[in-house]
Amino acid sequence: MKKATIIIFGILLIFNAQAQKFTTGLQLNYIHYTIIGSTDRSYGTNKSPYWEKLEDTKAGGLNINGTFGYNPIFYKFNDKLSIGASLNIGLGYILTPKLAGLNGSVVVDFPEYLTLRYKKKVTQKSDENVMYSFGAGYDYSYNRLPIKGPSIMAELRLQRYAFRLNMNLLKHTYYYYYTSEGTKPAMYLRLIGMQVLIEI
Image (cartoon, rainbow, N blue to C red; front, side, top):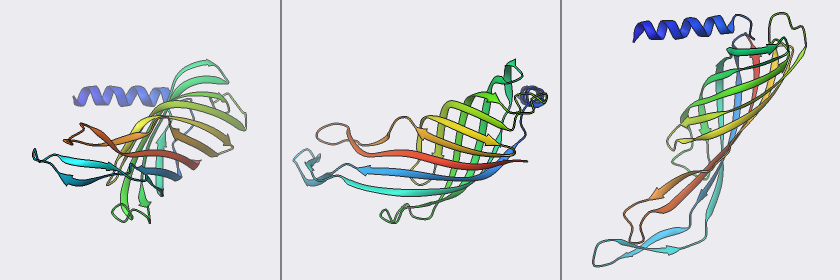
C-alpha cells in the first residue's frame, strides 16, 4: 500500500511539473435548506407514526472555508489547452441562524474536479495572463448535516489570482424512515459557492 501511494504521488508530481502551482484561498458557500412540511401527529395501533402535510420551511446558511488546492495536468493537447484535475480541501464554519443545531458547526469540504484548462500556464511555455477552467466532479461537505453530490465549476484566473464559481447539480435529500407511508423526504439541501484563490 505504501509503495502504491508513493508511486501515485510521484506520478502526480511529474504531471504537475508543467502545471500551475498549488493554490490557497477563501471559499464562501451558500447552502439552501428546504425542510419538508410533514410532522408526526399521532400513533396507530402498529406504533407507526401518522404523517400530516404542513407548510415547507426554508432556510439559508453560509459556509466560510479556508481552502488548499493541488492542480495536476493529465494530458496536454498543445501549449494552451489541457485536461487535468483540481483537488481541494477546505476547513471552516457554517452559519445558519434559522437552524440553531447547525449554527457554528465545523465544516470540512472536499470539492474535487476533472478540469479543462485554456490559455495561461497550461505549460511553462505559455505566457498568457488569463486562464479559463471548467470542471465536473464531486463535492462532499462534512458538517453536522453532510452534503454531497455531483458538482460543476467555472474559473477565471488573472495573473496569480483565481475566481471560481461552483454548484452542486442535484439536491441532496435526507429521508424519514419507518413511517406508516414508507420512506419519505425530510429535507433537501443544495450548495452554491464562490472561491477566491492565489497561487503559492
